[in-house]
Length: 410
Image (cartoon, rainbow, N blue to C red; front, side, top):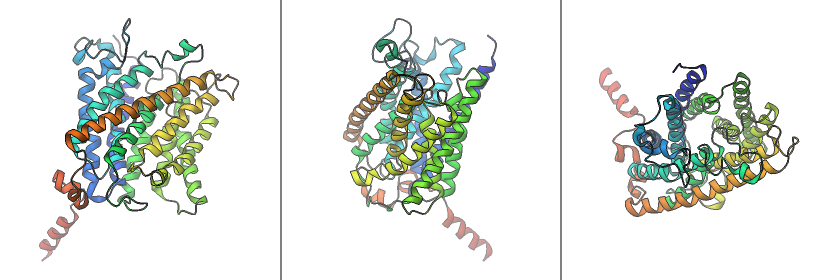
């Protein structure tokens, strides 16, 4: 079997998506306090390990329905360990693995500063098995959401790269896990400020860089790939403007962290929609996502849940906006561009279903993990700093370097 141009592009896109999880580690690592950087980054890296192994063993098998197969998800035993996988499918196996890794890692931002690595690894493995793999099968693998349009006689659900599967799924899970974990010690507005703007910027840059492959990795035509590329530039650009404008209107000083958060909001919003919107509507989507998320991240203080790094305020909110936005502006079928209400109906059903399923099952998994492990680190470790006490590492060995410099010059 010859390697085609689309195969080469999917291989390259897999590398782009894979680097997004270390990019997320940097983004999240910059957002936490200096004494929790190692712990936060390790959550993303460990998700790559756990989910990568599970994907090879049975995740890929659960991720799709074979002909004649039906039920909750694909059978985990039909291709256990990829023993019988066709060589022509290996590229798609790798591409899907990178998606599964970053989706799970996204959740970890909700529990920064207070949860142990063992508890997180247990949650991540069970969550991937019971939530991510089945939802991916529903939306992309021939499951009920992918067939919803045919069932109801409407246009098919549109989810290019994971508005429901990735962002809504992870955001709903993050809310459930944050509720079970409880609030950080001293939780209040301004109490846990990000320690490194440069790390946040580098991490966000890597995310945006990888997002090109994230959205367009399966594109097979020049026009489609070009549209996805332009929209993946347009929406986050508008998201930056939207976020900064909100801060200015609220009398807040504009900053890089807000701007980068606006870019992420725009990227999340365009994820399901990049192949189905004219660029002008992608700009509007990014602007709406940036504005909405800038307001949404403050809800945790009003409602009393501690989503440390705003997974809910960014990924859940912008994921819902992007998925529903298609019902109004998608080519041909959008309600406001000449279509009917059918696409909006199925988009709404898919959003509500994934939010409900992911939240409930994630809540049950989190409660079970809490029962088994306690979930949180002891209060004295949380206050003193998780990194050195729990992992034996610190992000910046500056004091040691200073001592060495003094001893050398003396």
